[in-house]
Length: 425
Image (cartoon, rainbow, N blue to C red; front, side):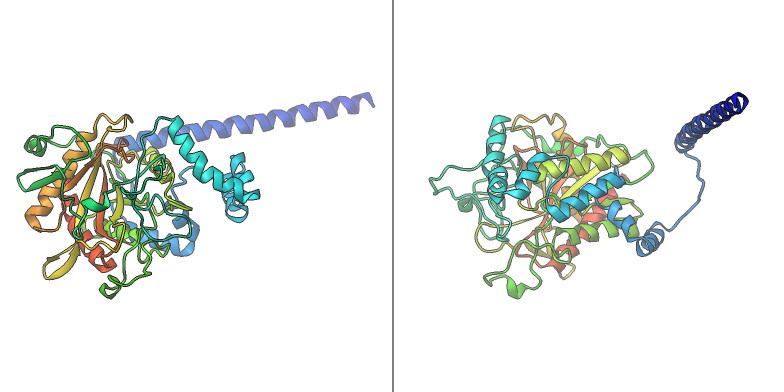
């Protein structure tokens, strides 16, 4: 009996040793593979000479739809546990890692307080400036755009983030502020009534961009902070009442415009693009910029080759619909406006002039090739997540009174000048 016990113990120790050895060897193989992969990547040697990226992507998306979902989800750190949490969030409307959302799912009163009064108080405690966007006052059930009323004596709400806004009495149907401070030089017009910065347009125009496209991989990221901003289907809807300005139907909102821009850059100019369609403004625009910041930052971390980041929006009015269009090659095209954020609210953004430089160069090329297609560059006191790169811009393509086709038409001209800038033409 004693001999059997000794043999059994020896067998157990040997098995344990083998398991430990396999684990160590597996970890070593993974480490060696990762190091070899990094060396190969940095060596710039081509393993595959040429591959039809779009064909491969389309094939994979058709056979495994989850690939497309993950690719454009913004959730770069994909994991099974993360997807389980996402499913619970979708079904039960709460996040396991955020106890506040559990209370919100159980109590509509608590949810209403958290999304409204608490968020406003949080912004004040964080010394945020009061920001306003035409739709920041929207409720989840209200698809119309609204703007603060200067004649209303009610206290103005505070939000953690916002986009560009105009006072109602400053704006006419063409979307041009009547009292805006305008700097013009070499066909470049800039509205800067929100800020008090000296802007030397000619100097910025002659300076090279501080952007290097030397890394392999995607060069451009397109995403949408206000993902549900929509357009009309036909000009007959322009003066009709009850036509919503927001829609989750991606055929008629800014996602469709972003995808058209991305496809043109890929197919016509061979520029690899990531287009992210994550919805950041549900259930409301409150906090949308914080959510889109997380999406963009995750993607940039995974793809350091990205240097140009475009947040595609559309403009709008408080009452009625805004249509900004011109004729290009005998076709109606929506006008394009670049919005440049600054550090006017105290948020760190020391390189905002680099973004302005990019906007000026794109504006000049558009004006030279397609006169009338641009609106003045708008410089805002808000940051809009543009501190992420030296090539970050908000691009307002048309307004909520433009047809989707007018906006799609404009993307091919924007893609052309983006290609010029990226390839130093």
